[in-house]
Length: 296
Image (cartoon, rainbow, N blue to C red):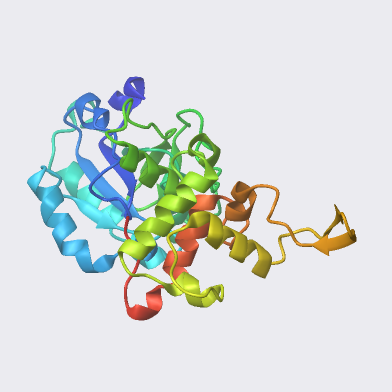
C-alpha cells in the first residue's frame, strides 16, 4: 500500500456509518503522509442520521474536514465524491504529479465497509459501466492492491482498490463485537451466539422491540437462548425426531442442533447467512417504524 502512495493524489478512506467514531485503523493517518484525505461513511441507510451533524463536528475536531455520507446502492449519495476529490487535489501540492492531467486516488479502510462497492458505484454513475472489482458480504474479498480502475472520464480519474486492514489492536471487547456485527470480522471468530446476545442486549437497551412483533414473541426478552429457540420453532428450523421413553415412542420438536445455527438462520434473506447481518436486519427493518434507525 505504501509503495503505491507516490502514484496517488488523494486518499479516500471508507468506513461504516454505523460506527463512525470508532473502529478506524489509526495507522492509516500515520502512514499515509500528507495526502489529501476524504472520509466516506458508507451504509448510511443503516445508520442513525439524526446524529449526522454531531458526527461531522466530532470528526472535524479530530482534523477530518472532508466527510461524505454515502449509500452505494443509491447513486445520488455518491455524486459528492468526485467533486470533493478534485477540489482537494486542486488546492494542494501534487509534488511529482504536478504535470499529470489525470487524478488518482487510493481507496482504503477496514474490511467489508464497501470500498469495492464504492468504486463500482462511481463507475456506474460516471461511465455507465458495470463492476470492475469483486464485492461480497464478508471481509477479505479484496486481497491485494489492484491496478488502476477508471471511474470518471471528465475529469479523468482512476482509483486503486486495497484490501481491508484492521487495527493491530482492537481497543476493547465491545469494540470487537461492534466490528463483528458490522461484518468486518468473520462471525465464527467471535461466535454467532455471542454476537446475537450482544445485539439483543443493544436492541433492548435502545428499546427497539420490533423483533418481538415480527417473530410473534411473548414480549421483550434478555435471554438469547430462549429467543433463538422461539425464533427457530417459528421459522420451522427444527427437526421432528422420535424419542424413546419408558412408556413408548414419542415425537417431539427439540431445540436446533446448535443455537449458533438458529442465530445464523433466524432472518432469511438478511444477508449471506451471517449472524451479525441477520440481527442488524431485525433492527433496521423492523424497528424503524418508531422513526429510529439502528446505531451501534
